Image 1 (spheres, helix red, strand yellow):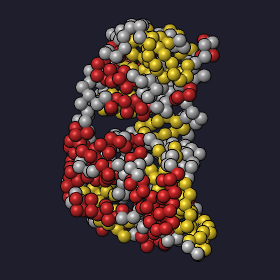
Image 2 (cartoon, rainbow, N blue to C red):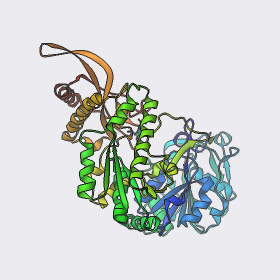
Image 3 (cartoon, helix red, strand yellow):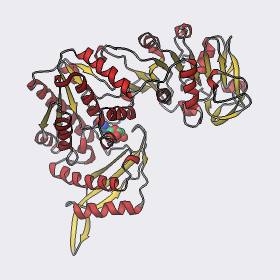
Image 4 (cartoon, rainbow, N blue to C red):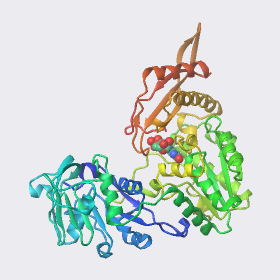
Length: 549
Ligand code: XMP
């Protein structure tokens, strides 16, 4: 079958595409020394970027079809070719731009990347079924047969090391100039090298944790082979971005929609550092916020950072619009549209603005599309302020668009935000509305706010908050009978949800112990009028989603 099979491919495998940076991404004041990662659609391409950044070197991912353009823009000091769900022998499978092999910079090909490089430089790749040897999937051991710059200070000749393989096809003849430097049972060309051109290929995946020395091998590539220092730090990023924002905005006006979450907050604080009072933040209180959330935002931005902040009390109009609505998608659509309307009105009152600031992150920029190029299925319409820039004729300022979530948290700390704030669980744009299946009313929001606050308080007291990706309460449209004292009760059911995740795309249920959950249930039923029963949600994602709607 295919080169990437189990690790790289999946039904409806996705190709990651990096959107073209628009002029709204702003002029690049100075591009840090960087590595370009050419993506052929592996599901673990992002991990390559993570490992390179962990080695203190800036990296960007570009799909193979846009790699030439990315190369011209970035002038990288090295290139990494990713894995793929495709197979090199397959008709129409992707290729690297040939010019990259002639650019004079070091290249590391991983799995499909190794195979495509071998193929394009004159070697041979054959499907597993033709070689009659099948593939290698999962843990494998390789033996080092020759010294190689990739192995510097790490592996020596004759040693055996664990790696993670996931391939069906294999290189059967390497390209001129290459030699074998490590072999495994299933892949005689487990690692190949052309030290003269500084081209390397690994049949295994160094970017996954199952290759224990993988991070160090990638660090060797960027430091020893490409000669990069590893001096890309958040302090440096902060300075570069401040200069970039100033250059982009000039004396223009910027507005930023604050959600109270980490991303928009960090973006706002960074932009404020760059342009001061040219920035105004707008916080829309749609009545779907958590307990005391609005006050916390006001204190942080207005009092602590002295950032001009407009708080819009829009609870009544949101509740009016949500009245009688029970369909999850229609609720989401209404909230998204109304949010934009409120935001637009406020921007007009402020006399308009030239720029809209958003806390867009790198995983949002690298968008998954189906491998065949068709649109992926909409599970839920996510609510953000998309649509606004065109409607209001504004350019975007997105200073976080190169960062992963944990890097944003690090930048937040660099900007003086405390750990409790930067470590906050994600909170969706439509807020509590998607945690109240059925009709949303102010009364139901108030009930849920109280239950949610108790649950999070218990989690914090138990020291579990940071171990959980997201925890929240849900108010079900179901009433059940209970007994309190000598009285019959007939009240709402509250669901509790807690998951672990790395990116929200998949999630596991957090395994609280029963005593903890019983404690939460007791407090919620005793302290929140309107709830007489509590249940815990044991569904992972997939097949569930994290939010209930
Ligand atoms: P689901 O429910 O799709 O959620 O498994 C995955 C992650 O996304 C968050 N989420 C949203 N975030 N606007 C947001 O900003 C939205 O409309 C939205 N819907 C879901 C959710 O909280 C979880 O972290």
